Image (cartoon, rainbow, N blue to C red; front, top):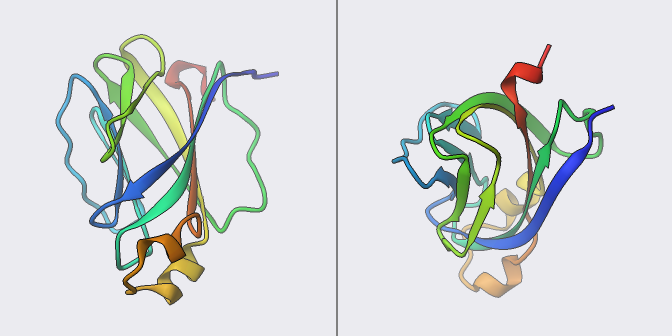
Length: 146
């Protein structure tokens, strides 16, 4: 049975519709048609909101594939290469989380509040939008995936 090793819960300013999880050894590029973009050294979640706002963000590190979760509006997955194994949560750049050693990791991301934040924006007044949207990112070593 896989075990959760670490959990970080924080609030992040969603700036220009993005939450960026950036390996401290890399640059980022964000692309794709879905709300989750995974590229070397970077995971980007695109908000459904049209204006800047604060979102709840949780990162979990697992020793193997965690069981899928219900109750989220949307989920996506990918595989990311991390050159250092440390991720910065941006744009605030105040949280750095050790995912593990350099290597490849699976990531499963969940989001909630996408429909609601889309309906509430664009709107001025960042405080009224606080916590409407939330994200959960789960990471585990790629070689442990089936």
